[in-house]
Image 1 (cartoon, rainbow over the protein chains, first blue to last red):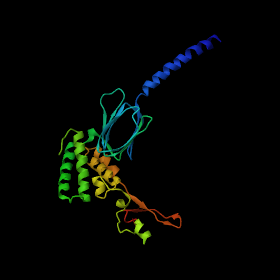
Image 2: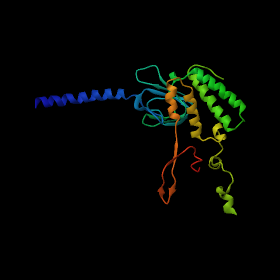
Image 3: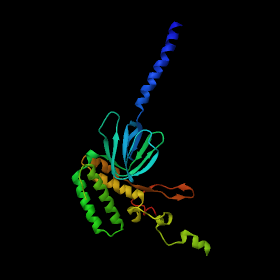
Image 4: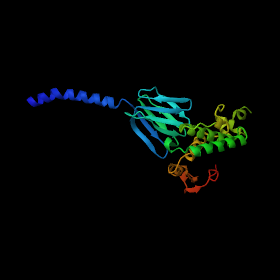
Length: 165
Length: 90
């Protein structure tokens, strides 16, 4: 009887301290980041995500206002809890949807690690695309394709610190 | 007659994009590309700019194929691989 009364007095205190620990662990936001062939993150708890939106780059933390954004070819940065260096991916495009419950879904057709970008390949591809763009008829499909190649390669070069024009 | 004048399907314009969309604003839309075509091209450009071994691995994602099957009286026929969508009758 005595032991049970003691337990009842102590247990509520323990329960309260456990819940405080849980709250700080979930202080970040939830990230779902997937590609057609691979799920990179599913339900991951991260501090911040910096998204390359087509209308501009923006950062998402917990309790961000709901937002749907088309992505431009650019760098997606993921800041994990306890690290100052962001994990960087270069995304080809896609969409980012931030929900009211601090969950962000990012879906891209292709995403690569910035470390895997070959600056020489990107520079030569840009030059080739630039030549193709000049040679193509304005407003034609070939011109549009060359423009896509130019924009993506220019952005990839910028991600590895090479400035192309 | 009034009915035919308002009927969009009587037009000779085969570019369905401009029939259903408002004025296109992006360069790829103006050139006749869909978003899927645009983003697929961007994905290819990204894969081509990679170092080995990431490049070989990424090029696997480029591969795709089509299968077509014809419907007859509510039943689907056998699937056969096709090289292009035009082969499948589109």
